[in-house]
Length: 119
Ligand code: 5GP
Image (cartoon, protein in one colour):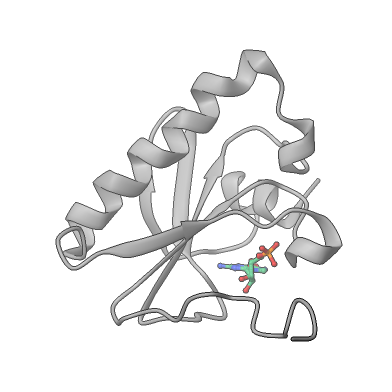
């Protein structure tokens, strides 16, 4: 069982900001922006690579939840970023897919700052 499934089961606590039949969202324990919320499906899907066609609608619900949470948290107009990490190079550490929602200040871009090739 992933640590996020334990949060869904209320076996470990979390600061929940949104919940419906399919999706749960809670504040990241180690925030990387003034607002950092994780939006997860209530079923365990390990990585983006494991998403099936039958789950396309469910994954879409992560985005409609993001827009709803952005309005609720007052960041919809100023803007925000959602990102989903996949596997080691993507920086994934919890193998239960989740959208990171980051907001509350202008965010840096791009995330990869090393030179891609020598000039
Ligand atoms: P990933 O690295 O997989 O993209 O993101 C995992 C995120 O989950 C990290 O930002 C980490 O801080 C967060 N996280 C890990 N364990 C917990 C926890 O028990 N509770 C909460 N709220 N966030 C967690």
